[in-house]
Amino acid sequence: MSLVDIILSRRSIRRYEKREIPEEVMKRILEAGRQAPSAKNIQPWHFIVITDDEIKEELSRGRYSKFIGDSPVVIVGCADLRSSRKWAVVDTTIAMQNMVIAAWALGIGSCWVGDFDEEQVRELLGIPDGWKVVALITFGYPAERPKARPKKSLEEIVSYNRF
Image 1 (cartoon, rainbow, N blue to C red):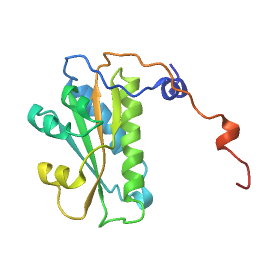
Image 2: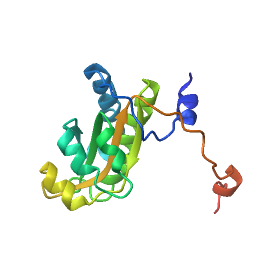
Image 3: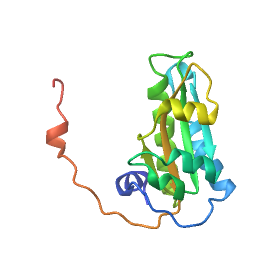
Image 4: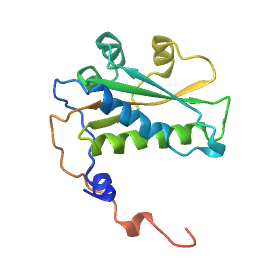
């Protein structure tokens, strides 16, 4: 599959098989994040890889995040606001999207999770001051194959030279 085909076929996965992701596969996914571009090459990110079932259970207490507890891995992306207040969140998001795409190419599903209490996550994971929790992403072998969801047409979302 071409990279574009991988991007176009990727879906959010909320049900995972009960099997671990091999360490070498996780390292490839994390490496894809590490290699992401960032403003002035500051690399203002830190990723917390969660495999502990008790921590995942704590993170799954939101209304829309109950599936977190069933995922083999959760990555918590944190942005260093002290290094680049303007671009840290964007740069960290780019790195996390690199991981999502790499994971799909390796047969690993994922789902972005924005339903979390940042202060609870900060306290639970010992995240220091000056760092922002950008998102949580679950990873695992898909136990579902969701169909494509409707998307707006290009004509609705794209203009040239002026809005």
